[in-house]
Image 1: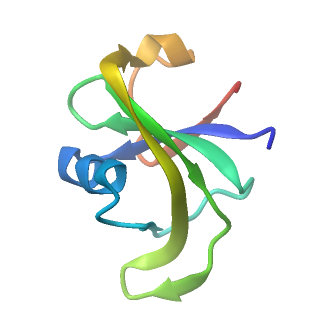
Image 2: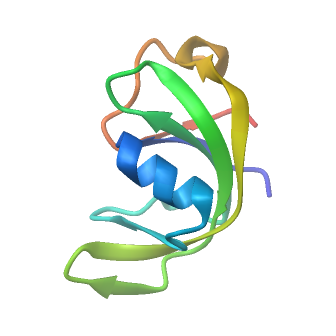
Amino acid sequence: MASALVLAVTAENAESLLSGERDRDHRRMPPKKLPARAYLAVVGTGSVVGECLLGAAERHTAKGWALPVSRPRRYRRPRPIAEFGLARIPRSFRYVEP
């Protein structure tokens, strides 16, 4: 798996993905390079709170494309978005170097 991306999520969605409550993320426009490691950046905080593996889009629903999430991992301390080579959190996602 050579692809990595920073995925913009709300605090509620990040919590449900990292706790295992949700096993899918929905995107209107899914990334092309999947599967990939996804770093979960919480909108409005400027920080990355965890990571997971994002699988290829499975199906299209009313919410958008369903992307399976596996192996969620929460960081002990949130990492600044600058550690990933970005000045700010992207609107949806942005590819970064793994």
